[in-house]
Amino acid sequence: MVDPLDPGTLALPLTFRRARGRPRKPNALTPAERARRYRARQKTLAMHVVPMAVHRDVVRARDDAQAEVLRLRGELEQLLQQLRH
Image (cartoon, rainbow, N blue to C red; front, side):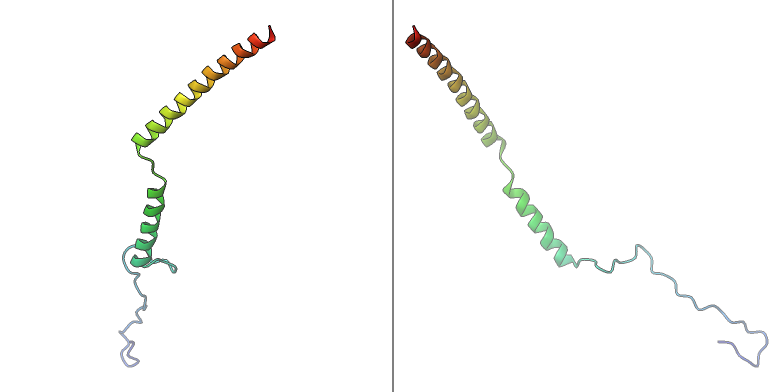
């Protein structure tokens, strides 16, 4: 505050200092909302995980089925050739 009767007083600029750290976003999530979203993400990730043992069993069964199909196709070709002759 400047005293009009005192010629030695100066008008000081009234500036506000910013708070330390990163400024807050206007649409920042509350901790509860962040936790809810985290739990939802974890739940969806858990639904898509297949244990390696199950994966190995499925791949082995697929390979066995493909081998069986090849064997049966070979037999079918032999039988068709016998019928043609």
